[in-house]
Length: 501
Ligand SMILES: Nc1ncnc2c1ncn2[C@@H]1O[C@H](COP(=O)(O)OP(=O)(O)O)[C@@H](O)[C@H]1O
Ligand SMILES: O=P(O)(O)OC[C@H](O)CO
Image (cartoon, rainbow, N blue to C red; front, side, top):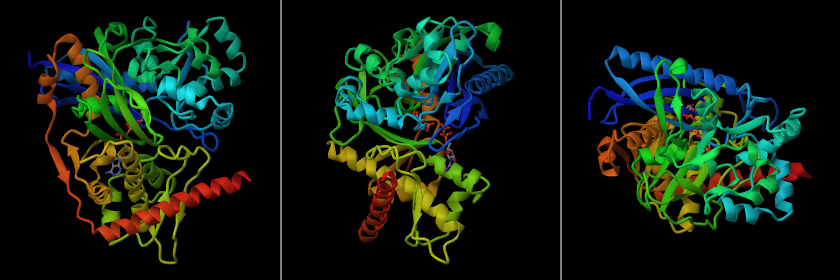
């Protein structure tokens, strides 16, 4: 393979849009990133401006292509990975969104989902889609937009509107409106896709009141998604790899076989265990989801989802102004011997797995006269490790005992947290040398389509080395710490229950 060729990976994450150019060894030769504005219009509501997502993405693609030219590298294909579930509804003719994108963290449809649960729809939803009935997923977000934007439902019935997750919206724009497509990993996060039959499920469409005409066609992750037009990005390139960011990260970490697992620490944290061709139904409130496949039959994973991981650091930085940069949290936490009995439960938008409590809200416990910034920062970081313990316990209870945990994502740069995570889980934590596993994963998918890489064996050469963090916490201390966390979570949930009256 010509060493002068690269694959462009577009990663539309929750906090930023970026483009990375990967060579045949999986090395990043060029990258551009632009932050994304977060909108919190009401309690539990989280929005993005879809036009900003597209324009920022476009800017990073053009800038990366320019850098590639400067260093004599030729982009040959595009892969797209994205924050999942986040939903955009746009005009079929003009491409203009009719409302801001409702972000995966948004809880505005909690009442609607509760009503469906009370009507006994939860089990049918889980059996068909592998998901729990929760506002996290896209279906109730589509219904909300159609029912709350004046005239939207009538326009949808007339065929004037289309919708999709962020991948779909970006593909539409890259192809000048020619492709309205998504991939099966993203489709499996909508609550509308039957993960066993591989199609939009008529019963789910009825339950959530979503017209099928709005939805994109679904392809495997390695497929022809159309051509990014030269008049849009500056050169014509095939889009031939698409996957939700967590599934892409799993692929980029080399979790190709059943039993392999990873956890990605970005805005949220998502732990996935590959279950091969078998869709495993969790008995402990984990999700069944479609994983990436390089070919062959559909692959599945079991997933635990935490809504707030890096987002707690963002909150400490932007809202509380405790730090100026995310990296500062490491030194502040390390400066203390212990959390001094202080626990922070970052249930800002409810709690995800294994609690699924939409109404819980965040709290800090154990404050004393001497409590200061360092303790709060440490409690914020610790909460990410404790939440992971809750996921790992659920995985263990489902029969997936993790012997070690592979990690990646922006927050995994924090050495103190990775050590604390290993201590709390009491297993080795292995951080890959490229924490950009998400982008590498989707570059791999696109590269497979065009023969840039031959097969999974060939891809393994791109996987970097890992740094291991080994557990060294005394067992008694670990049990004490975890007991404190369990009480804090129970208290938050009890508060939500009391507030409901
Ligand atoms: N050294 C660090 N310590 C703690 N958190 C960090 C550190 N570096 C980055 N983060 C957090 O990681 C998140 C960004 O990671 P990233 O993988 O880019 O997320 P996303 O894909 O969700 O946008 C941010 O929330 C940021 O606060
Ligand atoms: O933005 P991230 O990397 O935390 O990922 C968001 C997830 O895809 C939401 O399901």
